[in-house]
Amino acid sequence: MDKRILAGIAVFLLAAGILAYVLRDNLAELGGESMKKASTEFIKLPTPDYSGGMPLDKAVYLRESRREYKRGSLSLSELSQLLWAAGGKTHGGRRSIPSAGGLYPLEFYAVAGEVEGLERGVYHYNPEANALERTFLGDARPALMRASLNQNMVGDAPATIVITGVYERTTRVYGERGVAYVHMEAGHSGQNIYLQAESLGLGTVAVGAFSEEEVSRTLNLSVGENPLYLFPVGRV
Image (cartoon, rainbow, N blue to C red; front, side):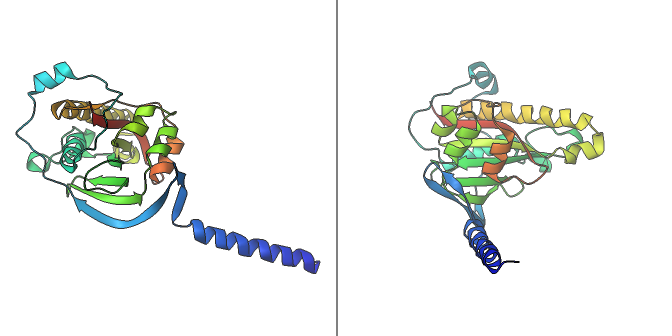
């Protein structure tokens, strides 16, 4: 083979290796702020309040989809309360939502932009420990908004809760019918988020119009984990 061709191939491979190294721990630019993979870090959340808040019947009566939010951050306690309502632990080791066979296929993420005590980033919720696992640093809201067909409330909200589902946890027991069970469970969780937001004086809206591929890429979801629902939350 011609020496010039060999030299060109060598240069190309070297450049490709350098580029791969540089990009290894970085995602694409997200609204001018680089999204970097964070080392695993657990952040203990405030204990949810199990006894206060608005009466259930009033929260049901007032519940509505709210797409516009005032400026202002969420407190860590408010985020903790919302995530707990979505799928946290209750009495006797149970969870806040029913799950077919007690298999719990849902996972929960907080895309935090303006949350007191949290750096901007993506956080995975651990219901067993009532804690957050930080998975990425940087403001992911612009990318999540683009993935949601440019729905402004996703970019404007101080935080968005993302519900994902691992179908295999349920289908391995219930077969294809398990897919429907996962969707039912996501509905239970979503209604809890709505009612908890009302009780806290916050607003939210269920967002189902999004690119699954782009949301998965933004959150760096594992293979077999599927985004199901987005709930931007803000002050109203």
